[in-house]
Image (spheres, rainbow, N blue to C red):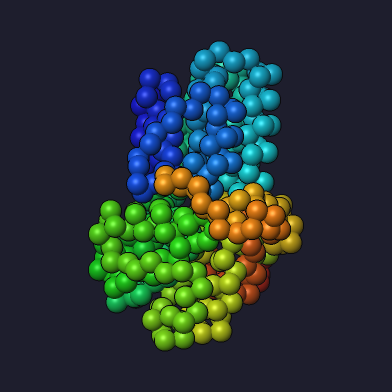
Length: 342
């Protein structure tokens, strides 16, 4: 494979390296990813995270394994194992479907390498298009609120929702960004805050439960979030806590936008109830782990409910900003998401 660099992925001398997003922002720690087990471990631990990035990392690893001489049967098993690593984010499945087609070619090694590199290049382009479409919706002087992390750390390009915010900032239209901590794993507090600081975008970090008071005080002009899956009726699965923001935005009359590439759309998924929601480990709620170590604050025998995602109904969404344009609620009602979008 050719040398490749994104914010969170590197290919050097046909070796895949991933930036540990659990160590940020205190340490920039890179891991050499040698095997499927390595990558699955990184994905489960959220060292690799973000729906687009998960799909890209899996595609690049498969291409690397093909170049190392793995046979078709071994690569098919790797595909199956990677596919099961994160059930909610459909980008992974979409990317792996394309890698599976490449695996079926006579010269599957070259085909898989070309397809993986093509997916990275496409993601960069998709991010730019999303940013441009979304920035056109941001009014001058906007105070925006975002949840989780949707920037270059989670994609190959400028990001999805955070890419919109960056582009709008470059156009001089962002006055302030409110950053949800995003409990329980603090992707907002650790990652989005770090990225906004790197970009020089003014922001303030808040606990998730503070968003309602800001909306009541008319301190939020719009909300921008990403997506892990968009169902055929327009329902959206995203990081837990997104649905709460959508309900609050609806009550306060604040626009609520979802920014995602078309690869996040799943026309085979009828609605939000059909989206599989990953349940994660209790220890993520009973305490916290990071570059500082492990902290336990709850009783050791505390029972925990810890879904990684929730579903926001289409009726609460003001617009779906995709790489091919802005989709309106009227278009969703007319069934635009029931067919494949590309």
